[in-house]
Image (cartoon, rainbow over the protein chains, first blue to last red):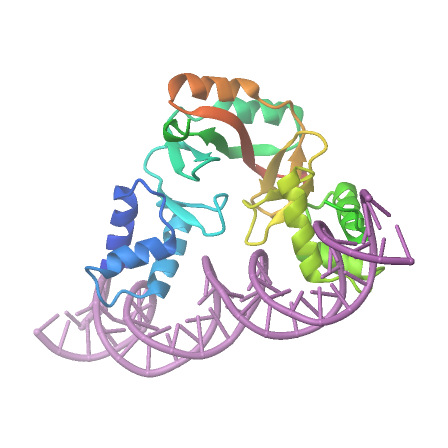
Length: 123
Length: 123
DNA sequence: ATTAAAATAGTAATGATTACTATTTTATGT
DNA sequence: ACATAAAATAGTAATCATTACTATTTTAAT
């Protein structure tokens, strides 16, 4: 994977964002200071970066994929009222994997949890 | 929600299926014995049934939504080798929700867990 | 049996994502 | 620096899962 300016600004955008942006949000924002950036380039890089593990692709929120920084582990919550997606920073629950492993035939590598929440604003 | 023959066969198909079928799989199979069934009808009913809670819509597996019986609680696993989606029957982990609630500002209503697994065949 | 609401079939449209191609950029060896 | 090959991009076209639309049919209740 060679260096590219476009990939750098895309990954920086995601790492500095708190909003779990979609491909289109990333494209529109970065276009402002990068007038030749192509939407295809955004999609291709999001795909590469999520496959390499630098970012994570979230499929479980709405109909558009969302992307998130993968620097430190966290779970996700979605407010059932306003739809906001939030990070939930708690230690990875390793015990769950070992427990499931004990009661099934499966090797458990990891897990993702999505919490259905009500955020403070919507309470 | 009025009765309809089409909705009945769709919900029965899902309840009898172990394969977490996509809309298209359901459509193709049911078409065999129901030559006028429409794909739009399948989509519309899957939407209604998942909103009413009779079935659940799984968004986190591949690019097509999958549908599953919601009669008794279970989690899901996806084999990272063969892509198979399996049910994991363990009690709902209520403690997790209460623990998160204690360390965040959020009301936690429920959660879904996706396990990344290796199935017996792929071991 | 009448009637209004709900549902369907079949088709068209939408919209997120992927594919394609000619051009440009990057990394490497001379 | 220079040449070269691999990798990446921009811009556009194509794909494909899903949703919307409309005329007709079915359901449920009086």
